[in-house]
Length: 162
Length: 381
Image 1 (cartoon, each protein chain N blue to C red):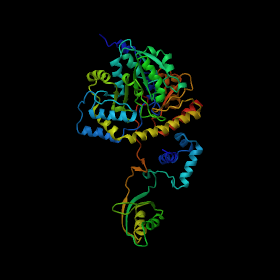
Image 2: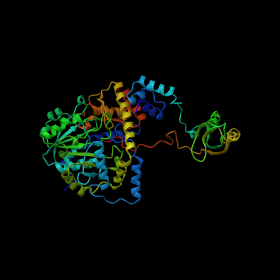
Image 3: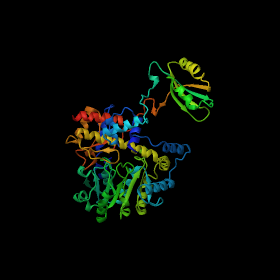
Image 4: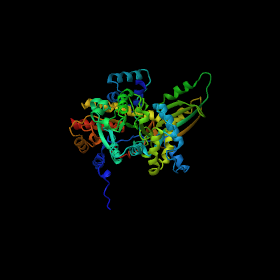
């Protein structure tokens, strides 16, 4: 693995590793690590750093939904145009063009079910190119961005072994 | 008649690691760097193959030497990865862990009065195993100055020229030392000159970080005098499934199998199914585990350096073997548990050359390693 790949893998594992810890794990020195991270950021490879939150443990709970969108395109409007418009809404946390039965997979977040519903019916559905929306409210999260929820598995190994 | 242990058993003291385990067990809040097994689960495909074999009810004995399909896969793997060329029908035996294979070899080839040179510090079973077989051990201490590699000088100085056999383990538990092909050559020459059998435990062969693992059996004139031990515990994190194997010339495997067929019959069947799948499809998982261990190794070695603790750059297995800041590593390790709730294993448990060192296992999450290292740092401050 190149230094870039290695640093990227470690930051994806834990974006809060300190420069020193990244250096200790990769065998690079701190200045080299900083240079690689800076390069990844300035090239736009790393777009940001965020906490992975278990909303079940937070008051007030956030309501999230996965929304399927079907669209029709015309001469003037492409996928990018529609995406650009939708991505501007702060409620939209994720937006991806996907293959299969529908066109966009959208992730929406709000304070309550009614707020999310209103957002879909008042802001998304009226977009002229959107022909259909299917909203799936998220009921339980087991894993987000590679992080398993729950209490983690217990280490059942003997504390000392040969 | 009473249950008076036989002379052979009475002569072997209880394992020093056991005492330490009991101390550690008194606390429920320790971070343990004393664990000699992986912290990963076996690759899913291997576990799934075991489950599927159970569902099909495939739980009968296998051939004494192990399932033919497994021996064939082992042969291919050993050839492709290490250049070890062994015939699956006559030169491979599958055992209940590499430990059984080691025991079989000792019992098959040692007679009372035979002498066995054991390179140390080493896994705790070799010396008792040799003694259970009625033979005598010649301690061959390796040194931190040699990065715990076995050298011709160490063999000569300890009187190994008089031995009938040599036991060695690289990558090494507890030191994390490895040996390159070049470094093995003088050892091989010594074994040839003094006509030693070589018992080479290569259970950590997949965990070599600085260079390709080299097996002494691939050096000139060594195949005919070497038994190679390996298994699935470390590479595939299958310790509790108890599956290992030995590679050796037909007459050696034949003799080992004579004990095995009367005592063990065959290695665990479920584990053999898991092992077939592990060899067939789990190479990526092994590479990922190795990369993860390597990052932790770098981390641990860097931290010791920052603390001013001398530690040679261990290049294999999942152990570092730093110098103990105190003279008595037993006392240090005990105090470290009591005061800081961090468990490491004192080096003297692993035989000659181990005193004054600590075995630190990094088969533990990076979060725990960070915390444990911080505690060690504050302990010695």
